[in-house]
Length: 388
Image 1: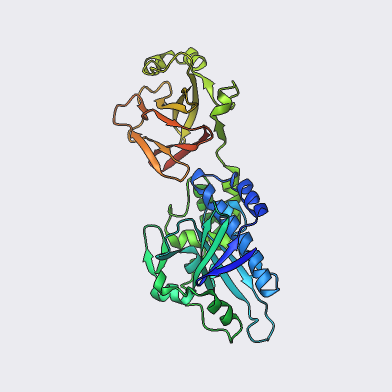
Image 2: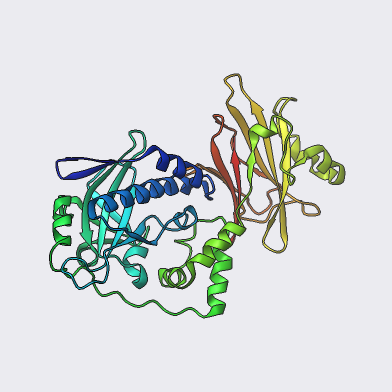
């Protein structure tokens, strides 16, 4: 599985079994935008583990990042190589693996979690490019924690440290040579994170346990402290509150998830909603379903999805958000957004002071395309996941 060097880059072949395992594991991930991140991390970790075993004859240990639920929160994994025996070059080293898909090797970006959470800090950080089409993995450079802290540029918007390619050691033979020498200083000092009380940790877990991508939702000091103390429980909470997936292809076969009612059933109990529903100019053959959603403790709304199939089998979808009786208008500043599988906001609509509905422009997508509808107001966010 280990291939020849391309100049100074180590090229590894991704085994077919690892690729299939990665696809299966990533299917459980929510939000949809992080499924690809989970796939990249799985093939990266498992392929590099094979390489390290082959190269060293020893069994590397996974320190952090071994399953999809972890990669929903943070990109990357950490493995420990070596042991605590007194022989020169055998001291334990922690290696952080950061996979990317892009072939742009001008910069290396490392999430702040791997640099500023004391228990997560690595000795070496490997820059890894994953080519899923060719089933190849390129280890194109590395750096140390000390270099990231002293020379890395910190980006507060996405909480990452970055180095230009010229600041990386791009010859991986140097990395293996260093493992045979007296250990060099690799780690910089890291500021300790505050200790969260049990109540503070529980509050954060409940707040960040929803489908929202959590890492930028709270200040880093609290986010990092939570991950250091109890990332497993946060992961479990996110798994427990996972958004069920609505399969629109199943809707075409008259199989619907339990929460999605017909509009006719709803209108029989709330006839005043008929005016808004008549704004839909879809054909009579269109499938119409509605779901009641709770925004916080007091606000309920109705999410309407209208589905049609075009001649080329693409799905044509129309979405509307309505107030639930006895209310006749939506709360102000409710936002309805369409989110792609990569997490990009494709379009959105926002309610005004007296809006009795908001809606998205009709959109089309191919069979089996994942997407999400996100409804937010104040600090409340509800996400509904679909596959067309």
